[in-house]
Length: 152
Image 1 (cartoon, rainbow, N blue to C red):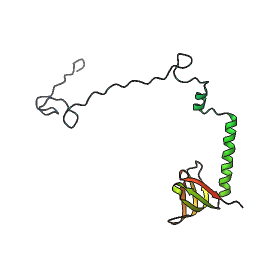
Image 2: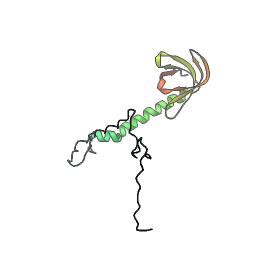
Image 3: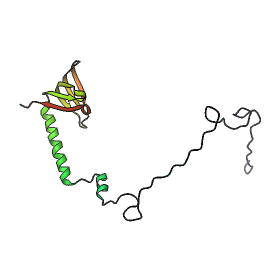
Image 4: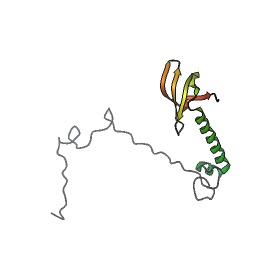
């Protein structure tokens, strides 16, 4: 049977998918109208770069360096020092009674337990709220405006 072309048969009258047997699919939409053809949208192009043939930012520009996160050694050192102070403050708060000031002016008291690495939540014990006392709870860091505790 090689070399013989395959014949395709057309649907017979009354056997199509559309009423009347035309063999065409039914029209789209609730009223039977066809969908409108989408309008083409223009393409946004970046301006020419400083060398004239490329698009985008110059790799030597300050804006490009800021997008890459190219920080100076001094800025990295300052951030590291601030992070270290913050972590020492969290370590000093562990096991101490702490007052948390939350959004909407709510203040709660608890015994500070720990904080997660990503600074998403504080774990506290004996949380005293206006509604009662919870044995243990997690406070979202995004809801905490300030917290304070006494040092010995």
